[in-house]
Every structure is written in C-alpha cells, then in structure tokens.
Image (cartoon, rainbow, N blue to C red; front, top):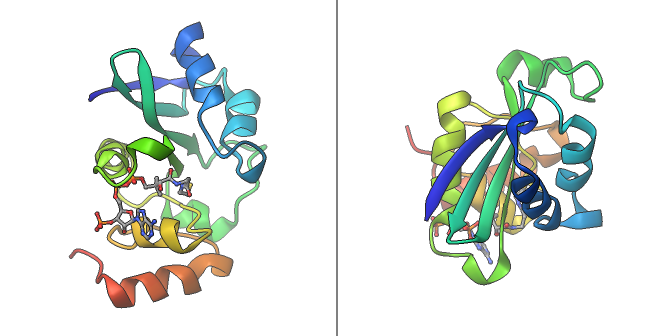
Length: 149
Ligand SMILES: CC(C)(COP(=O)(O)OP(=O)(O)OC[C@H]1O[C@@H](n2cnc3c(N)ncnc32)[C@H](O)[C@@H]1OP(=O)(O)O)[C@@H](O)C(=O)NCCC(=O)NCCS
C-alpha cells in the first residue's frame, strides 16, 4: 500500500472523488466534512492506495476551524480530529493502523469518535481525546486491550 498525505486544498480531482466515495456516508461525517472544509490547507487526508484503489483514508480536521463544533476541552487536548475509514473487504489487515501512524505525526493525541465497539477497539491502543459520550466505549475497549505507554 502507498500512503499519500495531502492537504485538502491540494487534493487532485481523482483523490477528492475517491475520498468522497469512501466513508460511512450518512452514518458519519467524513463526506460532509470533506465537502465543507475541502479547500483548507490546514486540514489533511492520509490516503492508502493499492494501485488505483483507495483502500482507506483518514481525515484530519484542524480543531481551530471556527465553524467546527468541538468542545474547548477537545481543543485543549488535541490539534486535529481524526476520522478513519477502511474499505470493508480490506479491513483487519492493519491498514487502519498504518493510516493512524501517519496521522500521529501531525498530532500525537488526536480527537476521535469511538462511536461503536469496533471503532473503540481500534482507537483503544492510542492516546486520544474524545467527547464524554464516547469515553465509556473507549474505557471498555481498554479493559480488553491496555493502551500503549
Ligand atoms: C475502524 C476501522 C477504521 C479499522 O480499520 P482496519 O483496517 O480494519 O484496522 P486494522 O486492521 O489496522 O486494525 C484492526 C483493529 O481494529 C479492531 N477491529 C477491527 N475490526 C473489528 C471488529 N469487527 N470487531 C472488533 N474490533 C475490530 C481491532 O481492535 C483490531 O485491533 P488489533 O489489530 O489489535 O486486533 C474500520 O473497521 C472501519 O473503517 N470502520 C468503519 C468506520 C469507522 O467506524 N471508523 C472509526 C471512527 S471514525
């Protein structure tokens, strides 16, 4: 897999279209956020490509964007909000974690949304911030998988 990191402002039409098409759609915010903040040079896409196929990507939104609704606590703890999506048939191969490794170079404590058990299990090993609503998911997952020191 080739990992390509670009600011949203610098995405080619092909990259933008691929990212637009690969996400939870109505179940998440990546598609809308890409549309709303797609011209920003302070937000990033970490893309995983296998040939011409985008197999996964991570959207990093700068928490200082005034239009982004996040708590003061999130802003204090993190620089970016990180959302990750891996194409269903490519999951469980470490692609998500490879994307996170790149994301962590921009923020060593990103703000994340462990919205379900799988996402919580995925983020459990990282030092992250999240809203109070999801702390329980993360703590539960960490009981099963202690966070790396
Ligand atoms: C969460 C997601 C990004 C993981 O991507 P991935 O490429 O499968 O992740 P990896 O292969 O790198 O790692 C898999 C890890 O995720 C967790 N995981 C993946 N699938 C899981 C499942 N079905 N049930 C429980 N945990 C699961 C495991 O903790 C696993 O960790 P391990 O490597 O210690 O076993 C992917 O499942 C996905 O795109 N989900 C839908 C979008 C989403 O919920 N994103 C996160 C919130 S923004």
